[in-house]
Length: 310
Image (cartoon, helix red, strand yellow):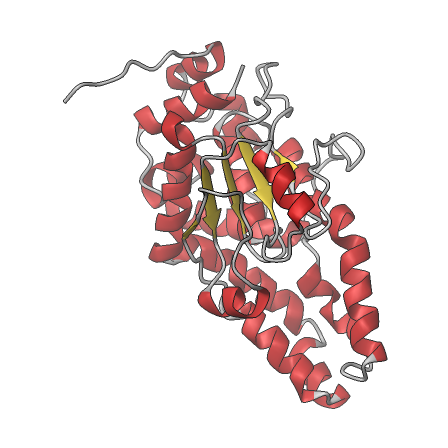
């Protein structure tokens, strides 16, 4: 079998010379605290991130531009994260065409695709279905709304139940074998030159998409606080759409207190820390999770850095 040599960047070489993947400073930066601990101030805002403005999706952006701990940067135009693409306009599809995507990965489960619509993509491009189990979040949310009963909705979502469901979902990203396999395959695709530029998404582009984005940024040497900042940006980018959804549900008489949905609509740092704490419990560290949990070998992780860091 003919092999293609990988051209290593300085960041990739440094990673291999330390722990094989994450530089020593990056591993130390991985929080060992349980959920609920607040990290330092984050570095980017919605004003500085490279957002892809679309009419039919609100949380689409380029993961490029982030600075690594070694002072280099993630390349633009290689990896994009998004929310659902089923409601894109013709103009939106034309904008996606300009990204020259080779691969689109859809993390939604079949029910979400059925309800929200299949991706609208440029001609010649089709989505790869790689559904990630979210413990039935979409179905449970729709069921709670469908009761139209304020007392029942409070019982299902109130008093911290929605927040605990979200933490359970994030822990499930780590503990479920099929979820790990689908995240791992997407990272392998990103490392593969023939599969990029690549876009991945779920329904809101914040949880399954947010977890993978955090992992990707950390794996190529972006500090925790910066990767966490990218994760939390979904709240800014989704705020208006989520507020409109709550208002519409109230006006339609479906929810007397639509604010019960806020913990489900938002990303929160303690959700992310729940997954990280689970990864540390199960695999000892983030590096252990990448290697043992996701099964990513050194060659793949080095290629990931070589592809994305300049």
